[in-house]
Image (cartoon, rainbow, N blue to C red):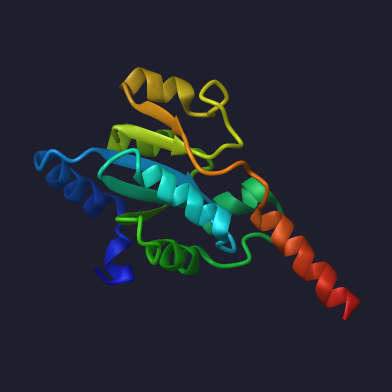
Length: 163
């Protein structure tokens, strides 16, 4: 599947996921900003995919990332971040969302699993109460968080100022 074909608006994604469910497939939702895709992101996405049959990745819009990460972010616009994430083999679908939390998407998509990175525990996942209420299993996946886009951006700034 072409990477562009993996990126869907919410209404089309809901239709596609209904079809996946009819075929008995387990849906996993992972989310994040994915600003400057790095190896830790790929390991997170691969870990999320192992939790089910279909991996949906929700990417924060430019405005919601700015609210979460501050001025100067995102480095890449949402459409570019979506294309990069869609190119990861473990990813089946990508959707861009406007909120700073995926609670509304959990309500609308009703995945079987909500995958979060190792910077969380099952108890500290912000959407934990929503997941519990909806019967969505929370899975902590990926490797220990030893890297971040923010760290990478800072290293690039330091390198550019030093040279």
